[in-house]
Amino acid sequence: LVYPTIVGLVTGPDGALWVRRWVAPTSVAATVFDVFGADGRFRETVRLPMRCAPQPSVVVRGALVACVVVDPASGAEQVVVFSSRRA
Image (cartoon, rainbow, N blue to C red; front, side, top):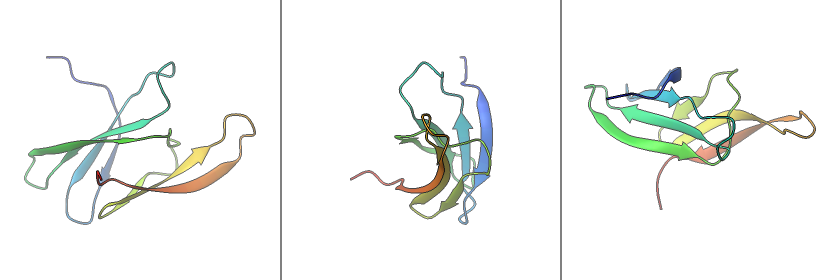
């Protein structure tokens, strides 16, 4: 097996570990996490529809994920909040 490159780790308040995968710059803009429970078992893969900046770190609180997104044209930064739950 070949596993994706890891570019960041975040822990949720429930002890879950969010493992941020490297996404090729030529692919569709996205941020991808593999989520593992506090017991180490894989839970799910969460794909956010924008590229989160590497710093500051992503924040996970329950079903909400917040990160800084940089506009490629202007360089302007904004904080975006996503729901990690599927509809």
